[in-house]
Image 1 (tube, protein in one colour):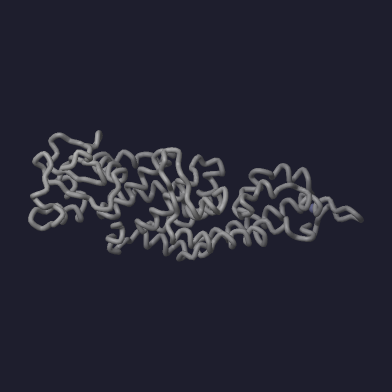
Image 2: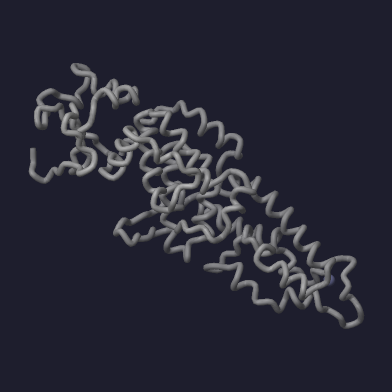
Length: 331
Ligand SMILES: [Zn+2]
């Protein structure tokens, strides 16, 4: 055993009876707990039936199993959660907990631990919901950053939790500062480089122009119309173009746009309703808000297709009824 390998400071039970190695880190745990939780572990650790568990590989008299393809970070969180699932007690996880839940989702899928996979998806859905009302309730003040959106979009692909994809991809597409971040990835303050998987880059490449177009032609079309005034506009007298001109003059683009992308879901009326009402007549302001609302609701239904995904209902059922062989998760 090379001295480069280190005991994990947390997941090292001195009376454990099996040692797992992920990257350079060793974890000493209980074979019975692993086998009870996971049919994959059950097969893998069954003495005499596994090449992975060669009795010649031992560490401190315990069988040593190399977990090829698993990161130490993922394995640490996964093993901790196998022994204590209190991570799932909270309804809305804190920002710091998102990477841990991502780790649990990845490995609980790979090792077929459904009692951890299901709550991991549910907890992530609190931040990456399927219902528009839940998405809007999170508001634009979410403390999650682009690195979280990328991590969740990637694990949604890797762990077949595709129900998380539309909102995670939407947040990637609209919260990135520029296209470089979406293509090259970003480096977190902890030094970790996070980058979208190729299939997620493809979805965003396909989806971003459609989001922009939907903003210009549907949810915010009044800003792009030659005369957006409603039929009963109070400001229609001779030379009175107050409502029409307001749409032209306001510097709303700096609010709505980022990297020249118009976010069709930007909660404009939540932010600026009183300003609109005080600047324009009641007829125009309410007709624009109704138009925005109808556009947003319709667009949310179409969101999966914008990213070249199956409809919401299919994403939900394939996530709930995972029957595929999770072996592609092996890197
Ligand atoms: Zn008007």
